[in-house]
Length: 348
Image (tube, rainbow, N blue to C red; front, side):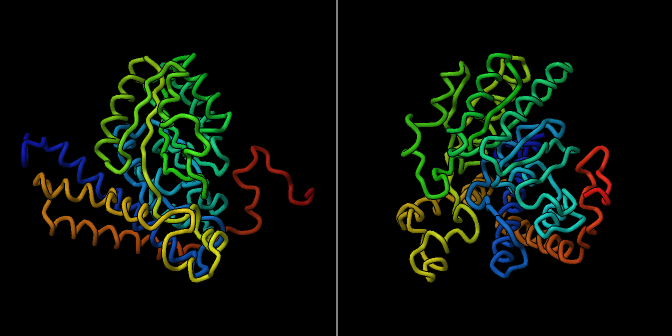
């Protein structure tokens, strides 16, 4: 069946779902920022605002039984894979109803039921995990694919290069997705990367390397879809670099450290980025790009997009209520799920 402007029904549905998931990530993280500032959420929170198209586009090319691993910028990946925003929000609050029962926090969301193997605050540490999962899939004769998400900073870590090399040597079904937001905390990637593009490094491991507009969710989807098909067919890994931009600081609260004046934490860009640079990337907001596509191609009307936005805000508000009302774990549960044979409390 074909719908508006020649789009098949299933493609129209996918484009709409891409928009929903990007909105879900955006509104989730906007709420997280507000709650960090109010003190409701404690600890490190690294927002995905501005980068939504990378994870959503990549995950749209995957099946539910395919796997992903993530990093410290950790809310976007599970939400893009179809994760439960209630459980994700509860985890940020440290509640028992969270993905890790309140013990993992912002950087360690996991949901094996939809292929989210977990995330880590240690740079590049999830890449070897992804390669191990891909090896398991190959040994079992499964046609699953694994996508590890990592940043430009992680691309300089030894674990990243070891993972890419081994995946290529063994032709494992891995699609390495580098979400290059161009800054490792406050350091621009061109000051630490010797090549023009991180995707150029793929040639050293005899795998395809593709630079993609990471603000365009459809461009990301198409690039990852091709790499996924290649991996499923047994031709090994690929490296996809989504050139993107984070609108927030590296983590919430960091601007109070790197800003000279307290007022700068509340207005204007961080001192390591110019106003012109931020303004340029603000115009390339992935939500704006996808909304314009939906409208111009007749896939959705202004009213339909507005309703989608309102429904998503309601969904995130519900997640916040759920998190606030959920119980904290009991102190005696501290060893639950950590050991196969828990250490008796009286021996600690």
